[in-house]
Amino acid sequence: MERKVRVRFAPSPTGPLHMGGVRTALFNYLFAKKHGGDFLLRIEDTDQNRFVPGAEAYIIEALTWCGLVPDEGVGFGGEMGPYRQSERKPMYKKYADALIENGFAYYSFDTAEELDELRKQAEADKQVFSYDLHTRKGLKNSLTLSKEEVEAHLQGGEHYVIRFKMPENREIVEEDLIRGRVSFNTNQLDDKVLFKSDGMPTYHLANVVDDHLMEITHVIRGEEWLPSMPLHILLYEALGISENRPRFSHLPLILKPEGKGKLSKRDGDKMGFPVFPLLWKDPETGDISRGYREDGYFPEAFINMLALLGWNPGTEQEFFCMNELVESFDLTRVVKSGARFDPEKAKWFNRHYLQQKSSEELTQLFLPLLKEKGVTADLQKLERIVGSIKERCEFVKDLWDQGHFFFQAPDSYDEKTVRTKWKADTSEKLQAITAFFETISDWKATPIKDAFSEFMTQKEWGFGAVMVPVRLALVGSSSGPDLFEIFELIGKEETIERIRKACEVIQ
RNA sequence: GGCGCGUUCUUCUAACGGUUAGGAAACCUGAUUCUCAAUCAGGUAAUGGCAGUUCGAUUCUGCUACGCGCUACCA
Image 1 (tube, rainbow, N blue to C red):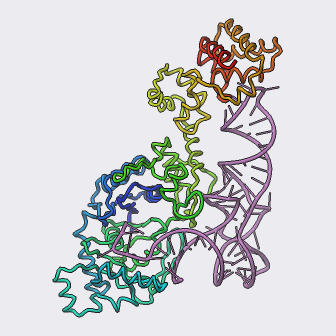
Image 2: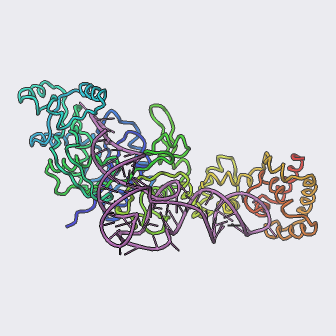
Image 3: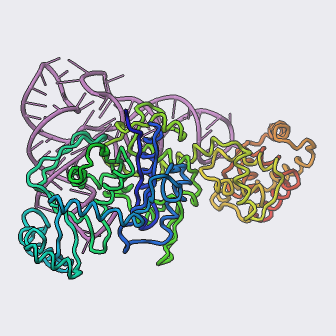
């Protein structure tokens, strides 16, 4: 029988989740749901030095905001816990011991300082020190020391680590679900530390043991893990658990918008776009990093954008809700090469999702901002205002930028427009228009437009010569939605008042 | 340095041996005769290089160039 698909997202709580991490979580989630499987969240906190308070809660909140809710994991329950590696600490030692027992691993007593020294020396000789099958013979470990010496070191409570004994000259070939056949020769690989002197396993041991115990069927992770795949495969083998071991898939990296390299926090700061899903305040420094949520992105836009970064359905569809993503997702259609992130595209997606929302819905989202500005208005009227400006908005906050004049008279007038469009006789014309407006009783956009057109024809004035100054008077600038809509929405009195005021101020 | 992975318009990508190399973003032009935005209609623009396999290579192989990743008692 086919095993139930189980995948995991396994971040380490060393800070906020990066958008690349969110994409990894997304692809895991989509793959799981596509195959009716489980998506787990496992916290990889084996490095106690790098623990950052709040990071774990952040990860959980971010996934939830994105709609990537785990079936099991820290904060979500489940039968195969604990899902925090620090809480699984007692489980790893016996696997490490078994490896030693069977000759797949060994104790290493070299101190960090000694190894550092060796690295420095090698560097001075333009070499790179590597703890591997060539050098281990000359180092302090249970392969070179006598049984008694090893025993003495162990008994003496001396610090030791357990290293994997990389076998000689083996070709490790694996079919990566995204990349196809990938191969490595073990002679190029080093003896990685599996078990640290603080009693914690390293990522390598812990992830293999946990994936086995949690019955993970597919490991979907970033490309930066590709070089350690052979180690992991060998570990499953040495542990005698390779029977049901997971299949591997390595996702392409998300690259900086400009230049090269992995997207980093600094890029966002520099170029003014978020790299994190949610705002993050560094508990040490107090530094704030902006988040997509706080910047006004809709989670569906964020997710849609992320999904298409490195994956495509092979059709021309580009807007997907989560269900559609689940439906269309296919690991084999993930691109192999790194994808440069384009912040403009993220905005474009947000615009799309904003346009999809009804004026009623948008008005509700707009309300808090209005309250903040101290503006109150009739809900129906608000919905009409929102309806008239939404198509020029990318974010909810743009509703204010695009529509503030509906609530407040302009306190200044765009200089360039004044200079180029406000002629000597403009004031005079506008006075005539206000007088004409006084005579209009049915103050609705269409009747005003009809009457106004007639008036203009009578006067033989050009629309352009008059409309821009009027707009300037009402809005303060030369841009905005249909003028007659604005007339109606701000009301007859206010319209006339603003025109009069503009004539006074500008003359 | 070693190992690994990658390379189609400016960007995200499609084409899994045969296409005028397609779409989207960006950009440019035009249309909407009040503006700006939006919208609509057009347009510019790509297979890193060299060999090989083949009747035929974007697609397969090799080399080369370039890029990225990894090379911690970090994940």
